[in-house]
Image (cartoon, rainbow, N blue to C red; front, side, top):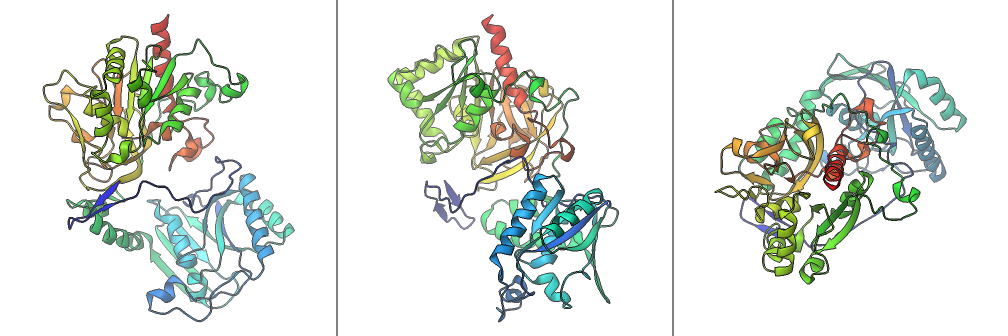
Length: 515
């Protein structure tokens, strides 16, 4: 990986991963978002974990005026801190918390604003009378450990009784105002009204100033201009239920089969090179969709240990093959082109009529390098550097047009959320758009909705017969609601997202070919 800056400086990142900490999560689906639910029939509570008086030492406020302060907040009672934490976890388990945000850098005022920034409508009416102390500045800017949680009015009595029973102090501090885009704050005789949208621009300014040092070709300015004009849109086909049983899937297939291999299931092979890092998510998505999945390394193909003769679908996963030393996927492509056994295995696979292939991110770059999507074209397509010239990682929206793709055909008309993470993801498509089978497009033509500047807003292209698909976004990282940065609130209990349908479609197509 590397980062090139506008002044020409290039920084090479080491190919290592450093994990600073880790923690156990009992149920990843029980997630509390910091985004305020814009519902007047709810209320906000402040829970102080510190058991300490409000202090400004070391706070963002003090630093912004060139001071450190003399007193810093602390946790006076560690046992109480733990009890507060466990109480919040229990309320999450019981489904009482609609939204929540910790008190950290910037204090309560920043917490409240950040809870509203992700929305385009609505605000908050806050009254701090019940909070201890008589200094409004300290109430708003002290960074004593604590949280703000949002609960529904119908659960208010149960929450109050639970907190009191566990001796957890709390203060009711306000309610949402769905029709008013302001943050109104009252504390005894003091009243403040803040424009959320103006402060959101101020909040983003620092990000823009940093981005300006990293992004080229005016992309930093485009991000600043468009950051709040490109909302994630989701549109599911009416037939989608979000349930495993819609597709006849068994999430406990491995356990129920006692680890045995289903000899009747279609075979999929994940082909990987040194540096591939997306194979586990992909293998799991294929497996729960009904495939038997095998792991195939380039060494297997080069040596002749694997010929792909018993495989109906191959997947080239994402990552950084050969650390991108020669450029994205170029070294990987060379392993096929200059090793006779690997080259022959691939050619034989693509010559068959009962096969499918999928390339994701680095795998998409590989398919372009090997010209596997449109070999009939006079001018080859390529994946080139993002227009920003930097690595782009974000969750964004794509539209699936009506199409003949085996994997995406039934998803036509959908708008779905998906992750991208790449430095060379720009589709260069030198021929007219009608010469390409574009089966997924970024929802917006401009950056950052189109994160790389791809021609025709292309996120995925497919062979003319619909069997071979190359895409830069990672659908294997978006098959479960809890994997997505945003998923419709009324569908948070779905088992799967519509992306699973792509893998099920592939399995069903192969089954028809095997009959």
